[in-house]
Image (tube, rainbow, N blue to C red; front, side, top):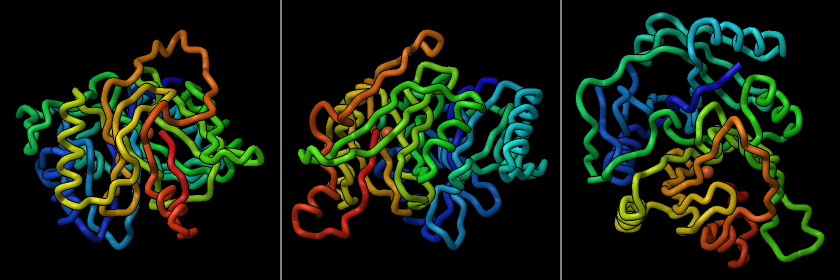
Length: 311
Ligand SMILES: [Fe+2]
C-alpha cells in the first residue's frame, strides 16, 4: 500500500477574510475558483492546495493524501474500517468540489482528521503568485507536510506505518539544558516520494487547532526571506525565527495562521530516496536559529506559553 503525497489541506475558520489576506498577501498563494462555502487557493498547477471553509471552528479540518487509484483507495478505506476508525465516503458533489475522482474522510487513532483521494483535474491557467513568490516546490513531492499531535503516540505511529507511511526520522527533542528533561518524542514519516516527511507526529496532547503546523516549500531563500519580510511588515506573529532543521535540512521560519496553528515556510530541504532510506534518530530539531515564541514567553515568566512545535 502506497501513499503518494500530501495533496491538499482543508481548513475550517470563522475568519475567511483574514485567511484570504494571509494566504494571498503574506504566503503568496493565488486565489482559485471558489466552491460553494469555500475559497480555494493555489500554489501550483493544481486547482487548489488549500481549501478554506467558513465555519464556527478554527482548525485544520483535514490533511488530504493522494493514492494511485480506486483499488488503492478501497484497500486503504478497508484498513480504517478494520481498525475500528471512523470513515465517511465523500459524495460525488464533494469530490467534484475537490476536483478529485473519489475520496473518503477518516480520523487517525488520535482523532486527527484526514482525507484520502485519487484522481484529479489539472488547472489550465498558470500559477502566478500575487506576492511575487517565484514558485512553490510541489510536483511528485506533494504540497508539503502536516504535523499532528498524538497523545496515544505509539498506537497512532503504528497505524500510520500500517497504511503505508514510513519512518524517516524518529526523534526525541530536548528544549532545555536540564539533564532530567525527558524530551519530547516525534516521528517524521515519508510517503512514496522524495520529501523527507509528508506527515509527522508529536507525542503531546492535542488537538491544537487540528494540527501543529502545515509546511509549504518555496523555490529559493529569496522567496523565504521576502515572505518573512511580509510577515513582519503585516505584524503577523512569528512563531519561530529563521533557522535550519537538523533532520530535513530545511531553511525557514514559522508564523501563526489566523486559525492559531502555524505555517512553516521553507526551502532547500534534503530530498531522500524513499526506497533506500534508513531512519535516523535526532536529539535536536534545529542546527541553528528557530527561536520559538513560546521559549521567549517562558523566559519572560509567562508559563502559559504555547507548547513546542517541531519540524
Ligand atoms: Fe515542519
